[in-house]
Length: 168
Image 1 (spheres, rainbow, N blue to C red):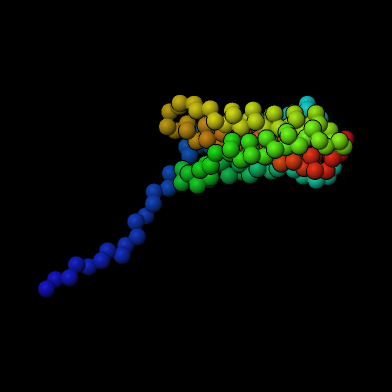
Image 2 (image 1 turned 30 degrees about the vertical axis):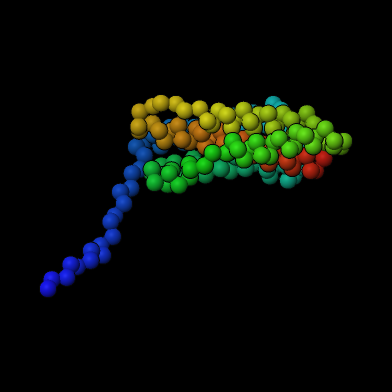
């Protein structure tokens, strides 16, 4: 009697890398994002903080620099692992209680905290906008969404920090 043999060969996954013009576009997006982040921080005076506040505000710059250096080596598979979550619900869970508690706290700069939270919500909403493009440009759209989400989450973290530190 013939017994069927088990096929123990592993299937190889096809790794799909970005084309060079897509990788270059993604790199320039991250560089532009660094410049815009610095302008945003200076424009809304978020830079008037402590050393820990500066460390929080440096998070997007570090993430964007990592994006610049890794854009040419990114693959569709790595994208699918990274871009699997929506942060709007997380943001709302942080912002709504903070807004209600903010009125009761005396020694905080309420303007900075409210500005940071409102800008964070707006950036998060921008990340939810769907743009229909050719399939090869989907990677660029995903990175734009990641840029908005990184900035949004950082501003929420900064608002939480400023709320609990209570600096004027």
